[in-house]
Length: 177
Image 1 (cartoon, helix red, strand yellow):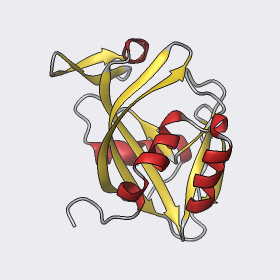
Image 2: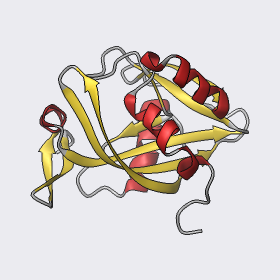
Image 3: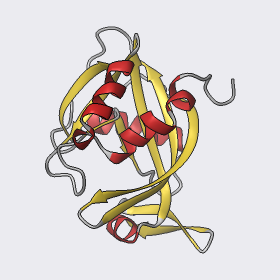
C-alpha cells in the first residue's frame, strides 16, 4: 500500500493510488518539513527522476503519509529517507491546504501538516540521489526574495508556503504550546 495516498473521496478518507490522485487533482494528505539553523532553512533540489517537478527547489522534504501513519512519524521517516537525517524531532507548526498545477498534467491538492525542526550546527546528512540532487542552506529572508525573483526555479508548494503561510510556519509557536 506504499503507493496509496490517504485521499478524501465523498468526504471519506480512502487509499487511492498516487498517480491517480495527482492526475485527478484529488484532495489528499501530505507532510512538509522545514529544517532550520540560525535563521537558515535547508532546501533541496528535487532529483531529475521525480515523477513531477524534477529539478525544482523545494523545502527540506515533503511526502504523503502511508495509510494510517502518524504525521510526525512520517516527517521523521522522510527526513531519513530523503536526506539521511536522524535524531531530529520535528514540531508540528500548522495544517494548511493548497491546490496547484505542478505540470505534466498533475495537480497537487493537499491538506499538509507542516513541521519544523532546529538542526544543530554541523548536522550531517546524506541526500538520497533518487530523491535529491542538491541541497543548500539559505537565509529565510533571502529564500523568499529568490523565490519571488526566480519563481520558475521553485516548486509551487514552496512558493505558496512562503507567500501565503510564512508567518504561520516560521513566526508562531508550534501547535500545542
